[in-house]
Length: 120
Ligand code: 5GP
Image (cartoon, rainbow, N blue to C red; front, side, top):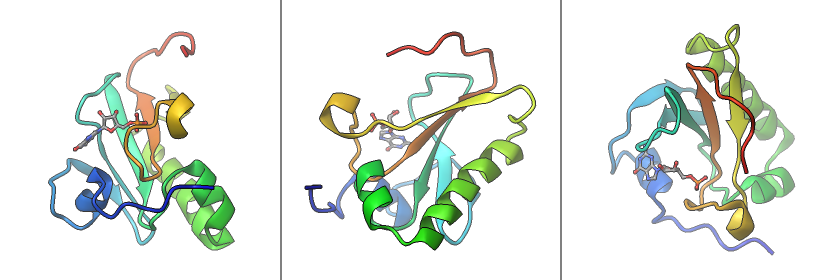
């Protein structure tokens, strides 16, 4: 079972405006901002505004419309940043073995340079 959502996680605080972020995109359902420790020339995190711990929680419990809106938002962010033609990479870490550190679903978007082969 998925752990209960922790309203004190850092991305919850960002969503409430309690912690600053370098916002690159926002719509009704999603927020995107630059990662504080970028691992590529462009490194953005895209998060749903709903309270979901992980991809597992989201895919199981979110309404279809919310899932669709989030997938659309991730694409919107990449297009807005001009990453579609050069290309980019999406990544989601889930849980302990996935190395997930922040317990609010986020998709990493990497780009702005050739990324090389996928690494573990
Ligand atoms: P995870 O390992 O959970 O998939 O990734 C969490 C990401 O959040 C890391 O890449 C980390 O650099 C980023 N991060 C952690 N705290 C903050 C913060 O306060 N602001 C921003 N913009 N990114 C953060």
